[in-house]
Amino acid sequence: MERYTRTAMALHWLIALLIIAAFTMGLVMVDIPGFTPTKLKYYSWHKWLGVTVLALAALRLLWRHRNRPPAHAPGMVPWQSKAADVTHILLYVLMFAVPLSGYLYTTAAGVPVVYLGLWQVPAAFEADTALKAALKPVHYWLTMAMAALVVMHVAAALKHHFIDRDDVLKRMLP
Image (cartoon, rainbow, N blue to C red; front, side):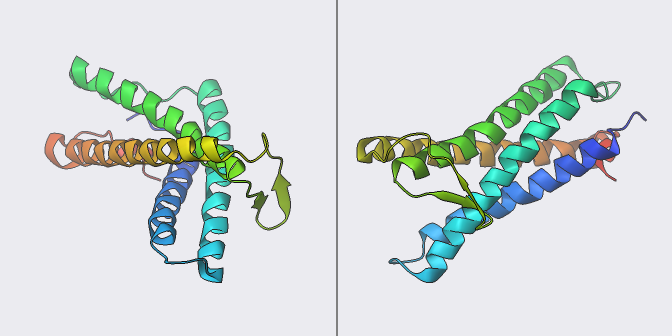
């Protein structure tokens, strides 16, 4: 069985955990009523997670470019191979688009991103309420698209493991 590299596995699982954490934090923080210290703390953590996902996704893309992933499992039907390829491409696009749209939304809101409370990420432009209103649903729907693709990705991996009984999932397990 051809496996992913340890680095690819580590980046995959770390990014997956961070995406789940950022998604969960996003759902929790927007439901906190009012303007509280807890809500502000959660927004900061959510942004930190987004910046980290963006940086690790860039590292992962570079790693993948230099270290080709294993070929599709033997016996995988062509439509499944194509679906896997398209899903992976979309997940990579969304690993960049979701945090970037969040950053642009935050910038449009005039709120700085201070990574880990230490380094301020430069603002791309001045605050703009019209742009903020336009970017809020963009960030939301990109996030929902990513959540749907992640669920589909996990379901496909579990289907391969439990129904097809092939090595697709095992190749990404440490």
